[in-house]
Figure 1 (tube, rainbow, N blue to C red):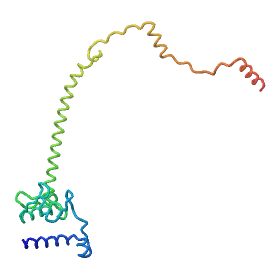
Figure 2 (figure 1 turned 180 degrees about the horizontal axis):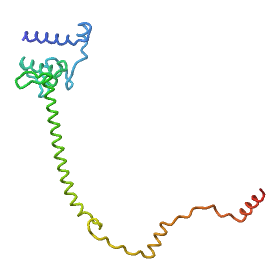
Figure 3 (figure 1 turned 120 degrees about the vertical axis):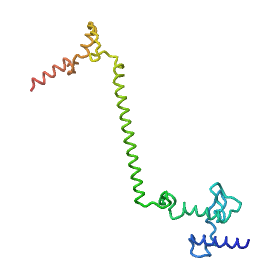
Figure 4 (figure 1 turned 180 degrees about the vertical axis):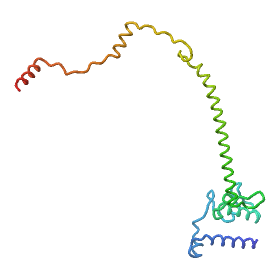
Length: 199
């Protein structure tokens, strides 16, 4: 039990000193206001080691190997210099890492396959559109209800217009009278004539 306590203390000191922002050790011991919490409870290094992906903090002790694996996974995926599995070079089928040239060739092949697939889809879509256009020409003749000379039907003769229709059309198209000056009263006409003679 004593050996475990000593190893835990050493680990805490090592971890705490790696990220310490204080100038001296005495400040570090005095400052207890900055700490991580989970649901209001303070998270210690022991709790961090016991975190699982399944859920919150667990009370049972895990093996040292299990804690090391969890910490390695977290360091690799989140804190390992920003390089996780997403940025790691892909591995070939034989277990070797692919070179940049191999990766670029693979990207070009995928792009060419995608382009060929798009062209194939485009040509099949154009063929389907052409077939629909041909079928629509036949249907369009059936949809035309107005008689025209083009489809062979006779145009019905127009009925002669009666007098009312003729007058209505004449009034509709008749030129509108433009506004003129208003009619002057006899006094205004006399005044205008007087002014004209005075000049």
